[in-house]
Image (cartoon, rainbow over all chains, first blue to last red; front, top):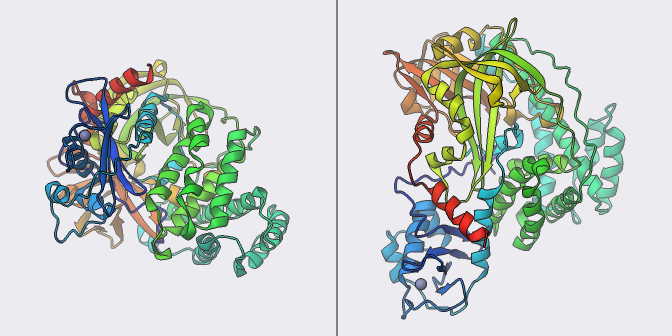
Length: 155
Length: 442
Ligand SMILES: [Zn+2]
């Protein structure tokens, strides 16, 4: 058992730059790799997309709960972008482990996509509210007082 | 002198063992658990103010009477043990550095105001403890979301919110716990105890003292988790008759996509001080508010640009072994070995593997968990300023500043500082801020 007070999870930093315009939010939560993908044409519209760990079943819909037109028996471009950006944000290892992928046989986002399951047809609107909560963090005021409790978060 | 550092002071091992025994209760939780350590705990605190309370709480806990006050007692007992370790180790380190601890007559801070959100926080923490970290279920963790969101919006609870946000997401990411061996028990009970004590109530912040003199910024580091970051700048403050090691902290919540060097872009207020750090220029303070243990509360009206200086000369002059630097301890409730961070400046060393070998024989490990300069960056350097730290029963040095034989400086975090100096037109921060203002104000 680890006997350190500090976190041994090194915060992953990619050499590649995240495209937050395209994918402003991505997370690995409970059983899903999920996030928000911007529409290429309409600034007001975003897509809510996810993959389930293990089965690699997926879904993609608009934030107004309409099905994504790009889903035709395989993951759409939004899901592809979501996966790419997840790999940049968290690292291929972490994403692969989270999705329960056999890493000895899979070495790229493309290889993960070829093993995708089927469209669940279950829209996950709550991902959009999680995105809004993530953005709300940016609106909170800064502070300039000492916060010794943050010492545990060594980064 | 420094070679004495690695000799373990008396009492350290015994206290660490007691903490590990106590932490074992938190692995499988308190329901039906029968732990010898709980029976032994009161006698360890005999003739301390906590004795009576521990006696009562232990009795109730072993009868499965789960009231949040008894868990506060456990947090207090554990914090007292970690605080004693901090005092022992700090005293030991100061002796090895040839320094005397400066006394602080800061009044101890007592929580005076309760808050319904803090009541919910203690409830939540109690539920975690009852369940045990190896048996946590996600509902038990996520039930705290809405309280947490409210804690974040109140400036008085920013410290609580910052820590609890990190703790909650760390727990969530670790679920489901596949094996008890994976639980970082010491760390999680540390976070649990600190959060529990912080949630007892809100205290008035201690009175500040105005300080004036020359400020020599010498280093900086980030503390961070996925949704929050703190930037800490370290400096020497030279007042009329005292030389003191001081800090300035800036903190910000962040969207999870903001990572790496872009985190520095969250701190435009820090730019003037960081600019002076990079350029090796001092600042002149005039009645800058400072907390009793050396934390400045930055006021742009209280500062002016000063003269050029040589950072490692200043570091060696005031933070070298045997120099009488004044460094004040943390307030009692915050004392914990993880908080030890004595400044230390060294020359005459070689870097061998992940260790710093001093000419007179002492060996110090280079810190690998925190955001200091790496082994590669230190090879071939001739002087170093770092923070002396303690974790896993071992001392290490987190390097903040160094120079090579040609006199070239290197700072931990330089790339981030340079990014902040010339912020790009678009960045993850600016794109998401723009999105936030568009989406959240609809
Ligand atoms: Zn789609």
